[in-house]
Every structure is written in C-alpha cells, then in structure tokens.
Image (tube, rainbow, N blue to C red; front, side):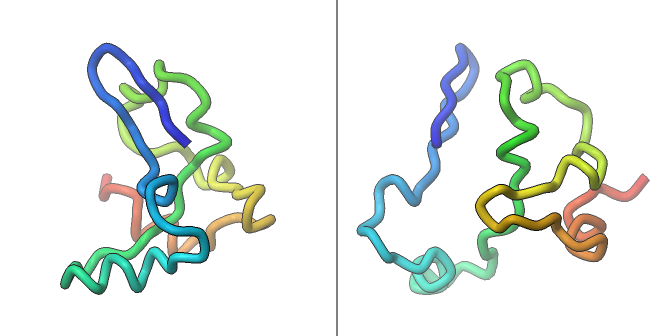
Amino acid sequence: MFMVTPEFKFLDVMNYLAPGTSYDKWVKGYGCQQTKSWFTYEWFDSPDKSVYPGLPDHTAWYSRQKNEYSTLEEWETEAPEA
C-alpha cells in the first residue's frame, strides 16, 4: 500500500521485502523493539484523514486481511490517553 500527498509519502515496507519475509523478524534483526501493529487500512481511505486528531474509535479497527477486529486491549495500547 502507498499514499502520496503534497506533505508526505506513506509507503508500506512490506512492498520492498522479499515474499514471505516476516516483518517481526526483519525489524528485530535491526535491533528494534517495535513490531508491526494494527493499522486502520479500511478506515484510512483518504489523504484527508491524515490530519484526523487522534485515532478512530475501536469500531474502525477492523482488518479484512485478518478478518477480525483488534482487541480492546490492543486498541487501548495504541490510543493516546485522554
């Protein structure tokens, strides 16, 4: 996936890795602690949403790829504290 606006270019690194590459293993191979998390691909369908203040409600965190919603615990981990 990619999205280009006058202000930024969003590229999914998985498009540049060999097929079958494990993202978690790839990131850990560089000594990083962060692993791939949920992203609201279905909700983030317009460059206008790049200026959305905060994260969308939990109901927007459905993944067609995983065929499930993130858990409330995962969502609360990603959501900023109010």
